Image 1: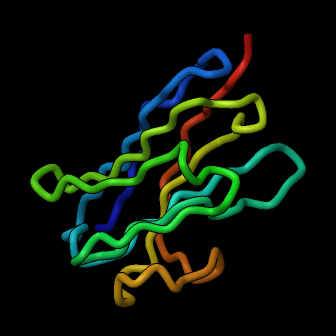
Image 2 (image 1 turned 180 degrees about the horizontal axis):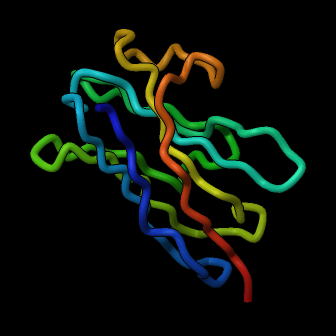
Length: 126
């Protein structure tokens, strides 16, 4: 059974850092892409970063580029999202998702995701 479980959310001051984890079970994560999404109340869930299977190519939206880093630990079957220089506008529920069993090339959109975690809340506030 494929499962994704996010952790690491919390309250952080502007300019601070936080690291989120997405632990996978039921499949070998290194072969598939994982996309991080975030959602604020009243808005649609938006993809912000993706890491491909295999070569671990990474992609970021402009709003987080240079501040967020996505990585993968194959031994732990876990993907991480390291966030630094956090801003109040980064406040959201963060989700990881995969379009497994599709090829892990980060071409999937939100509607292509087959498995989602339950999300973890990140609050950036002083």
